[in-house]
Length: 528
Image 1 (cartoon, rainbow, N blue to C red):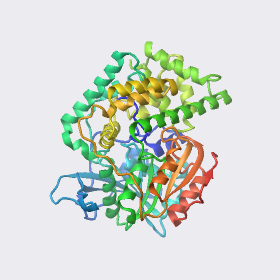
Image 2: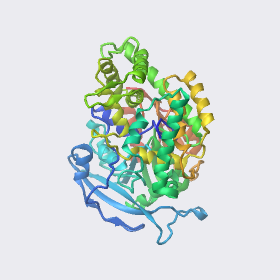
Image 3: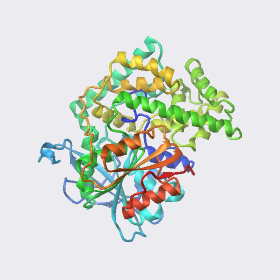
Image 4: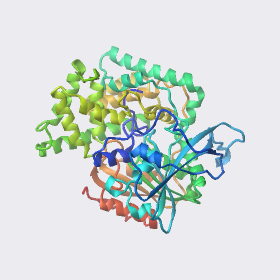
């Protein structure tokens, strides 16, 4: 589980909305997934029972540092079957069967009027916390959250999917192995280096298999999408209104296929094409990040007053990674900024255009012997805390990815792709190729999700950003076409996900969520 896996499985494509919102407001990325259960949680409601909501402003304070004025926060927990029975086309629970707990948070404005229902939200990952996302979305437009026109008509409901954060979390990767994973050379060229990466993945897989065994197959996307219908019922909505970012678009697409008659409105922002196999998705993401990095390089050249890497940012970044391979800069605490950590600082910064200047400063400071900026960017992406511990973001990411992943290329095939993609996509291609190792040594069998049309569903809004590195824009019309009822909304901007970043995008999505007004065919919103 060391290097980035494809957009379909989203090692790079993490936490789309929250990453964008917080970088835009000058904050660091949030901690998505605490490794321990939150104390004082509400009692667990059995499947089909009305959950018991409790006031929980402390959760908002833990996540965002404060609760939003004029917003009430309530938490609840519901039980779902560990494995839904899907025989006969329906999804039912086996009486007396084992269950997972699903954590919910509801943010409700004190100015709410003409309530439509609940807006269920998911930030992506897999592994991102919907509870945390609901908090951030509730903070208001000035902090990158939802507009008042939405929060005054909907409860904002976040859920942590099974295995994530507060919902029966998967925890099986040691902090030591995660440090080794992120710090590893993103392009291990020698046989010894490649074999070391294989061994690290094997050790991680063995640890997870020893702890969870066959249960690892239970964390796949289809089972999580079936949980979403239990959440819909628990909040009392006849039909689902949903906002999913990045991997959350896959959850929404699977839900629409399984329950088309229960869809009110789905916004799928940062779309994933579910029909891509692992190799296709990895190569697409390599192209996407190379394209985004090229945009960063051009910005740097045109903005030398804000980019200390000008006139040749590409050479500066490439040189920083190369130097880190042989002589990593050591921080004040003794931690070394290896090639892997520098590489993930680059990845982290490309999720938003606002991150470009921070990357330039971090690489410039690294050249002067200070790795603090590199670690700040990379740790935000990895979910690494200041004390060296990690959230369960990547434990869950790996469990979901490998449960979904039907195709597990051979070591020989991965090695071949590494060389091919090094030539085609020199900065990101090798890492995406060796990222295919993450599930090669996984001990559990996959349980793939369905792909097909959402016959009987109303129009579904699929939003794509032309400069998106993590879920390249080409996947947006592909997802819309697969569903058969998709309507594409294009943002000609940079970064991962679009809503609610510009007036054009925001007005189109708000009209769809509130009034079910579908944007005009082919609507394209300008960058700013």
